[in-house]
Length: 138
Image 1 (cartoon, helix red, strand yellow):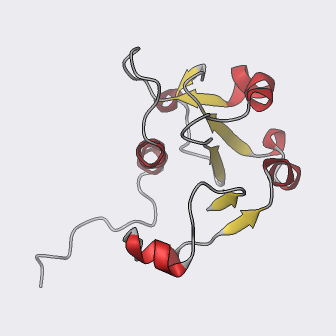
Image 2 (cartoon, one colour; image 1 turned 90 degrees about the horizontal axis):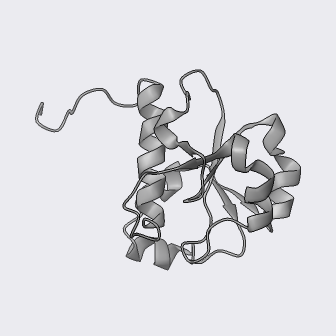
């Protein structure tokens, strides 16, 4: 997971515990001081990078993620989304959207991340994920 500052939330231990994120220690996190810094390190044209936006030209399910090794999906702030300059540059080639009712402005950020992430995982046949529940096998 890449986090780009400034963040709209705290990632100190107390805040993470309060949010119930008991899996935080299992995630590799790379922090970036700015979006520009992130894009210099990971240029979109050299990576499988997609920009999730309500203005996206392609439905997230119409992309073929099945053979991609490393995939970046960038999400903007819940209040404003991704910067306009970025969307203008990649609007036709790298933007994806989640279909929704025309009367809605956008979906909750965490829901959007979950929806798109699980579509990518589904297309990759849930590689490296647990196949069956072991809860009731005890």
